[in-house]
Image (cartoon, rainbow over all chains, first blue to last red):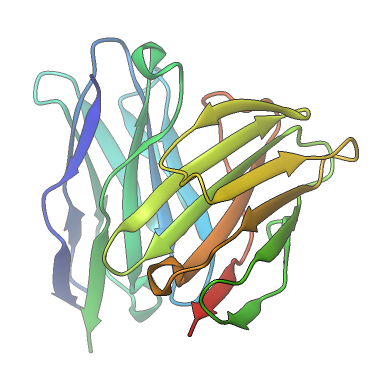
Length: 114
Length: 113
């Protein structure tokens, strides 16, 4: 059965420093992987999506994620954090085993220090 | 603006009552999803509809029900409300309902007192 583990419930970085949000998944098939972002008091928005094309996926707002099959990881990164990046980030997996239903991680709250 | 409209934005009610949350999907989207988000449970998938038919069911309580109408809008009915049902309820929509980008509404904040 597939699952998603977001390794950190909270990540705190200083503005201008790199961001790393970690996500590991389990999947029996070639998965599709997503990152969604939820800003305070807002709905969720898709940041990026991986669907077996290039392993490095670029998303909105300067974020990118790399699919590493050998490590079953799909970590989200950004070279330089901005105050507006403060939000909760969700890693999501979907594959044939789940009948393509979305399996959501528990979320990582990103805190940006000035 | 995602194009998904949820009403009302806020709802305050008492235990034991029944409420209806409404969702209008993006134009052209056939699938609607309902999610519940609370501090202790996080984001929980409740139910999905595609073109009027139930497609998938998640952690939806028996006191809750939903439907998707011919015009593709959806309603989530919550009955015999308990304090623990207080949460943010999101609706999302997508074109085909399978392995693709979801567009989320801004949610309905339900407070059960």
